[in-house]
Image (cartoon, rainbow, N blue to C red):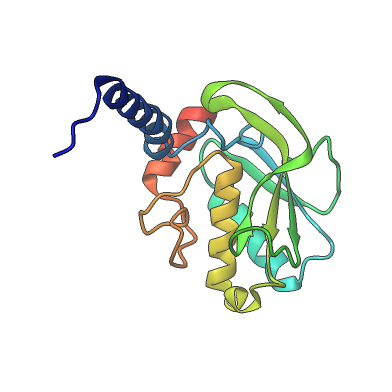
Length: 189
C-alpha cells in the first residue's frame, strides 16, 4: 500500500471541503439566492409576447391566473404591454437550442438587480419556451402548463424540487407544492 504524504492528504481534504462546501448549500437550498434571483417582488407582471402561439399564450395565462394569483402573497397578472422597466417577467417562444432543456427562465441581459440573501432579485426575467427545438414537448395543455408553472416558479425564486409538483423536472403537474407555497409566503408575505 502506497503512503500519502501529510501535505498531499491535507490538500486532498481541503479540496474535498471546498467542493462540498460550495455544493451542499446549493443542493440543500431550494429557494432564492444563490444563483436563482426572484423577479423583484410579490406583484408579478408577466408580459406575454404578441408572437406567442395561442396555446402557449393561453396556458401561460392559465398558470398566472389560476396557479400563481390565488396564492395569498402573490399578485400575478398578464399584460401584452412591453416595458423593460415594469415587466417582472417577459415570456417568449422560439428556437433556442442553447437552453439545455425545453424551457428556461434566465435574467434578462438588461436586467436590474437588487436585494440580498433570499430576497435577491433581477427584473425582468425571461421565460423562454424552446418550441422550435422541442415542438412535441408542448403538444398538450398539461405539458404547456407544466412548463409555465415550472419556469414562472423559478421567476419567483423557486428551485427544482423532486416532489411530484411543477418544480419537478419531470411529469406534467401544474401546481405548486405546499412546501414551495410556504417559501413564497415567507419571502413575499
